[in-house]
Length: 304
Image (tube, rainbow, N blue to C red; front, side):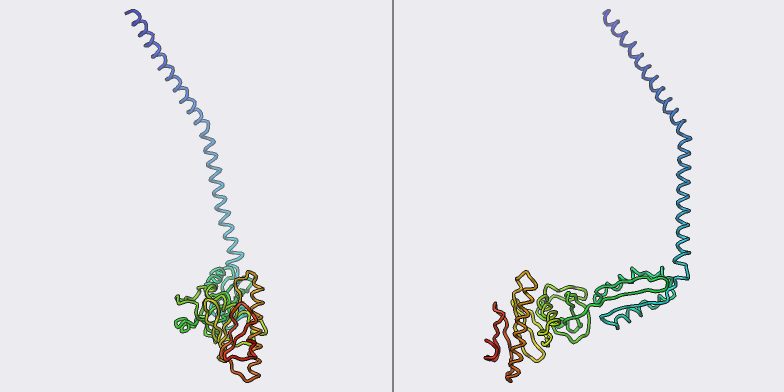
């Protein structure tokens, strides 16, 4: 029909016109992109040259700094190590052992001495509490070591045979010393470097207090067995003391005050018994009353 021919003719014409317009637009866009690339090409080359120049300058600068550092420090004979000082106030003998371990560093440039490695090697030793290694220009290396001080031996059979001891922090290390023997802290295998302060806390409290208190210094403690509620303290003369204090109080000063009261009472009872010629076998200082004291054999001078 006539309207079919008209309509189809218009559609063919419009389709051809649309395709040609799109083709011309694509040519225009491509031309513009090509024009932009042509304009930016010289600029990109300049940027690359600048970046290469900066990289080369940085490399040369780094090389110059390293060379200068070697000349001034690590290859400078003015900093040759000639003097090594080791300080260990707790144990000069251990200080000499540390000195012998680093004596071969003499003659080395001071800035080539691996101070971090030396310090790390020292603090890995369980018997070392702290270590500080310093360079002192122009020729000196100083090592300050603090050694752990043992306060008791561990009393399990295997621990005694290996001479295991603990310091006041509960850290285990090896030392052959005549010290009070702790037991009752458990049967778990002990290893140097481990910490068992929780298990032996009460025993360490008594030992540390005895070191500083007048009453405690009069007591010669041979062994302490840790019980659930109290401590069995055995003195060198054979006297066995059952000792307890209120450890539930948050104030440490109050705990120490009660412990001081009980130890003062113990020393007084021991002194009076010795004057009376009475040989005591046990003294019971357990219970809520810090002034309670029961002795075996029963003795009126024991304030029971």
